[in-house]
Length: 88
Image (spheres, rainbow, N blue to C red):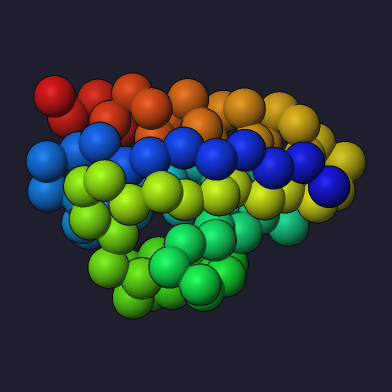
């Protein structure tokens, strides 16, 4: 299992477009990928689950992956969040 912690920096948080981009990227990995935030853990391959978390600017999240490509999954997803999903 591999995990990394980062902070949402998008002004508008994780709304539909970045959530969609995140799910597409997460779904490209074989590993099980989850997001932990605000005391909840959700499937990072489900846009509905991500949207239900209400991830706003400044929210700290932990990305967790377990499987054959877990290290690569966590690294790429963290880079995606840190890049603000290319929005700013």
